[in-house]
Length: 252
Image: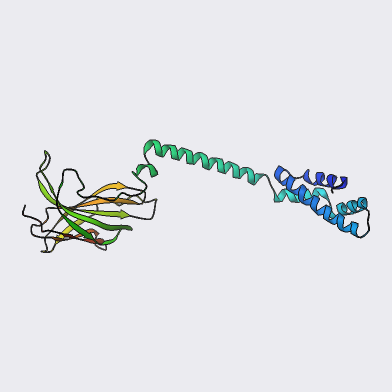
């Protein structure tokens, strides 16, 4: 049980401690230590009043103890922590609101999970036969994974004549959120089983933070062929995919 000497001593120590939570903790610890010391003296036959006085004297100068505790529990760090926390919350809210309003950052993406690609990739295409796209590789640190393929007939429109094309669905992904997606203007060519070749258009579709769905369009595929190889990228940094159709490409 704390006596008046304990209260006086703790008041003198806490007077030098500026941070209120530290004053409360210091008072509790000092009081517990003084009571333990006084109890030990009482067991030796010393009276309670005298034991309390000796326990306080054994602690030393209360002002010096208070200054040491104040240095260990400076109020500056807690205040700075609160300021930094408030600034971080304010910056987060500003960035969040700007992203929502301007559709930037994470909010420029359509979904969190990338939807499965479907073929044909455009509504004006007629599916002539299905196929299989195989292979994966890396271009510039991005992973390209083949998903599916199909032969598609697109009828003539005001802006283009009718055409046959092979469409292949691929996923282009990376694990570095600070990077932009792979540019669709990378070099891309197709080669058939007879050695003929042509150009490939890369058309990005749905996207998330770390991945995109692309449609690769093989223009003017060779009639009579059902196997094609697609090469993406430049020499030394290329990815090769294989496309096999269930049927041969019909005459144009």
